[in-house]
Length: 417
Ligand SMILES: *Cc1c(COP(=O)(O)O)cnc(C)c1O
Image 1 (spheres, rainbow, N blue to C red):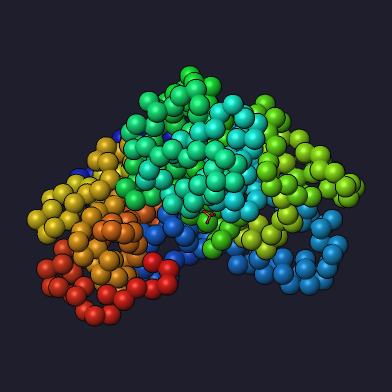
Image 2 (cartoon, helix red, strand yellow):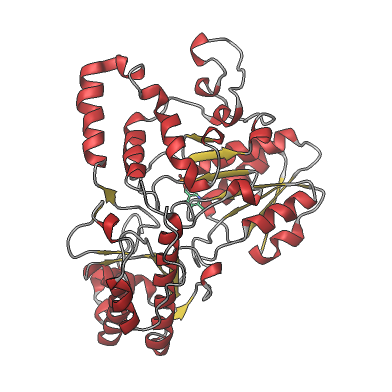
């Protein structure tokens, strides 16, 4: 593992070109397949296809399923979730046996938070930031309604001070999905623990984007997506992490045979599997797992300190150019200026943001829009160089000045934004 790349920084188009000439990630870029002419700033929402994924999925369908039929379970399928967890563990900074792969992030959050509430009846409060990812808030609200608990939301900056003796759980997305603000999980874990509460982090927007050290930081529980920076494919399985000693105490509210200590004994009563595996419910989705496994294999040998340094440098350039070239055009930077407080994402605000994002996409530059006025750009270090950021800023200025985004076609919403 290399640790080079620290101190990379660019604030002008000239710096940008120089940095791209000494790209430490060059040897890895051709592992990812992007259509020609596309600059992809949406790898934070759906990672791009990696080489080898399509072949692997085809192999599983045509050979393993087609020829081996049910024998596939004993020829490797049943162990696939474990193998994927082992590949994923270094991204999280945890031991492989403390991670399980299952379900969607929202479902995993519900299971973990429900287990915490059930195990701590004297504490009825879940604390979350008001701007948290909505799906997480929906799941937590449903949980609070079902188990007669309380979901309290506060501004993210007040989270640490709001923890009290009634708090069972503090939970938040590590990176704010709108602004890209990166929160300090270590400090939040300490604040939670000081009052006997636990910390549950949603890593959907940080896994693969920011090196994580959950063990060192004292994070108790975590969930996250396989389809964002990691590139596991649309709807890829999500993951669950629980600190070992804690996992063995927790009883999930949603239980199934694959989380049983002996699934194929078909016992009438559920007995929890050891550790985090008890949070698995149903049959593993083998086709999606095969895609995620091959996607994670594409990260082999890539140093997350180098990718972090590169995406920070892309972000620094973006913030500098946007300030200089877009400020007078009605754009403001919605993300923290300081890299240490930013995930791999920079967001802008503009009253005509929706149409501007659509007009950009028509020119091959793909970002996304989040209401009310946020233009969101993921800075996936493996797909993007500084020249792409410079071109994005140039195009935004050009579209804005020409009014090209006012075409009626750009006002129409797609079913998925
Ligand atoms: C994307 C995202 C989710 C959604 O995950 P699902 O797997 O669709 O449930 C949940 N939480 C956060 C913070 C996200 O960014």
